[in-house]
Image 1: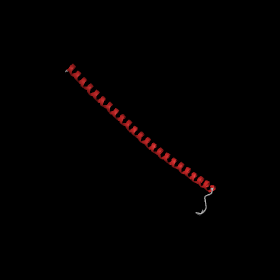
Image 2: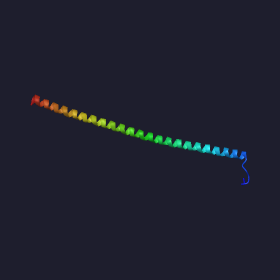
Image 3: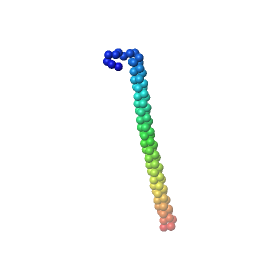
Image 4: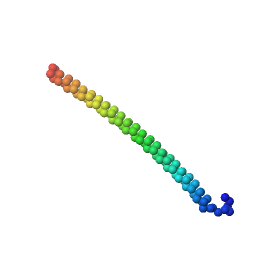
Length: 92
C-alpha cells in the first residue's frame, strides 16, 4: 500500500486478526515457558529438600547408634567395677 491509499475496513480487520493471533500465540508460549521454568525450580528445590532430609536422617541414625554404644560401654564398665568390688568384698 502506498502512502496515498487509505486503510480499508477489511485490511484493518485482517491485520487485527493476524496481530491478535500472534499476540495470543506469543502469550501462550511465554506462559508455558514461565510455567515450565517454575516447575523446574520446584523440582530442584524438592530434590534438595529430600537430600537434606536424608542427610539429617542419616545423622540422627549415626548419633543414636553412637549413643547406644556409649551407654553400653558405660554399663559394662559399671558392671565390671561393681562385680570386681563385690568380689573383693566377698573374698578379699
